Length: 242
Ligand SMILES: *[C@@H]1O[C@H](CO)[C@@H](O)[C@H](O)[C@H]1NC(C)=O
Image 1 (tube, rainbow, N blue to C red):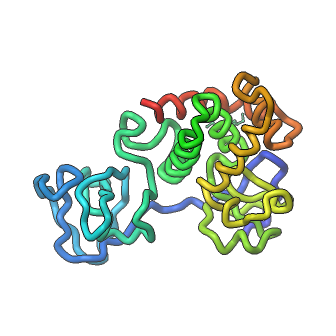
Image 2: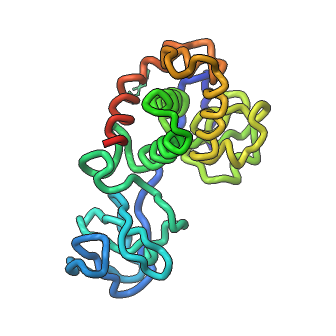
Image 3: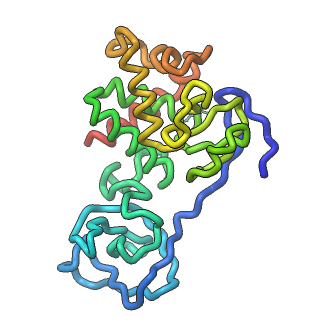
């Protein structure tokens, strides 16, 4: 579909994703908060399109305890919204101290960034780990999952855009020849885990210049490219740790 050529670290192709989802039941109450005890603001019916501004944990409905805030400003149980997953498809409400998205990021980027940050937290990598992961993801892909026609298997996984830089795929543009687990490369959390595993093997990573650290992990020739996204990464990591 795209014939653009990508040079390393620069991005020219982008498939915008809609965040509109279909309601799959009639008379679905949209409430003032993420639970069945909150007042009903309006109702939706099967086939209504809603866009999700953010998501929040709340009352369990049929095994799904996630609630989606719609652009109407009220919450519906995620169980009756066809998002294709019972997990998050966008940022958590209040996470960024506002609309729910992290600063400067749209819903898609924000939800991927949350996956990277969760991985850094799981590994106890602190602020330095968050900065390195987010700065790298911003520089490599603007935090979008890239498939690549040179790696046909990558097209079998969910993606946001299609690139053509060597055999680089996913948010971190990990090269399939070095990172042969395509399902991990194409998964926000999985690719972050691979990035962080390699990062922790870099001696002195805790105190190293962030751009140099990203460059060392990525094997890129351009440490400055990562530092160009450092202030954006600062804003995102700070908002996420609020
Ligand atoms: C990341 O850096 C590039 C290159 O300087 C810039 O074009 C882009 O806007 C930056 N992204 C963010 C989110 O600051």
